[in-house]
Length: 483
Ligand SMILES: [Fe+2]
Ligand SMILES: [Fe+2]
Image 1 (cartoon, rainbow, N blue to C red):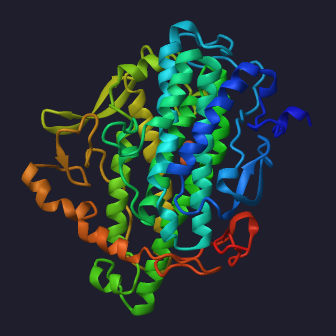
Image 2 (image 1 turned 180 degrees about the horizontal axis):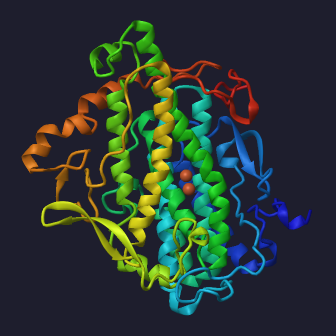
Image 3 (image 1 turned 90 degrees about the vertical axis):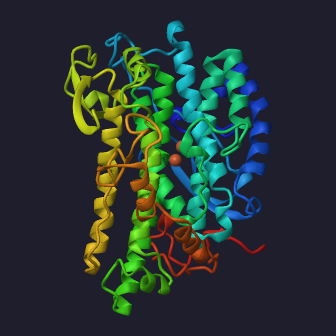
């Protein structure tokens, strides 16, 4: 085993990139550090900064064992800079420079575009921490609380990952962008985060689970396509971030799955067969399945917006420049230049929704979004299996891509979840059937009571199948009481 695999914890900023040998960047990051801690203390998880949390910390980038678990207070988490191993002889795998040796420095002509990609990715990381900062107070169990905090500290680390690239490769303007990442705030009227979904609120735990399922999954797709980048440091950074990201989606998927499971169990026990008998189901202290569907509709549609316009010159330029590829680029069987290829795009044509062949280069966003939809569908299929096993007749469905959109082809029209176009009035009368209403919100909020006893879970969510790090169900994942 070479020593480069292990993370150097001797410097203030843990890293596996020999930061000690790069005094300029080390100094810059050490100067950025206090501002980060300040941000974490004011915008990070509220009310739990002094509690000991059973967290994993990355100690290597070895896929077989990269994390160690221990009790730690969140502000003392060792946020580090970790890059996946360099792939020997890696090439630029797509675009006009296809076949060149991958870049280890920023190509001058792509500098602005690359910086923009890194800043946009970087901005989402602290944003989600801000959105989720009040959730600890209503955690349905210590297990869930721990998972929330794990996600939060790792989003913090992802911010570090992007800030490292800015400091290392973009000089003064990189350092300024790194400051900006600490200045914007989710939902702020004057200085909002850059992307819409990251300025929405995450008011309750159902929203949190849906967010980690749908919106962190957008993050996964973005990281997957940046991991293909010809700019090797970005690729290596994103590859390791993806390792952590998998847990975030696990939290979301199992969270919703456990809620659906609990609802079905409670319905069976009470002899309620009809999932649409909402009043009776809610009386059981569980969240009815149609409301889960509405929440999924909301988070899926907000997350689709994150992919940008279906037809995008920017996306085409990023691709041709070799900066941002497609999902699993190197596994796709085509020329990876795409100057002559086409891709079917869902568009609005003369008042109808149609599939239209467009130049594949312009349709890069659309393709990534399609890959995302498939990935989401896999999760929904697993949720549906859980429901099916209980004998309750209900199936989650992803709404049509025209439903509830703010960006792209369908931003100016209204459509139902099954993709029928509606008049403004038609939408208004039916909207509450498809998106969470204020009544739904109030009901969910009424369930959000803390459940912090070891081994206990709130009425509306089933316990997990297995604990974190193989710990038993009644493990004290967060030490709430001072010892
Ligand atoms: Fe992240
Ligand atoms: Fe994430």
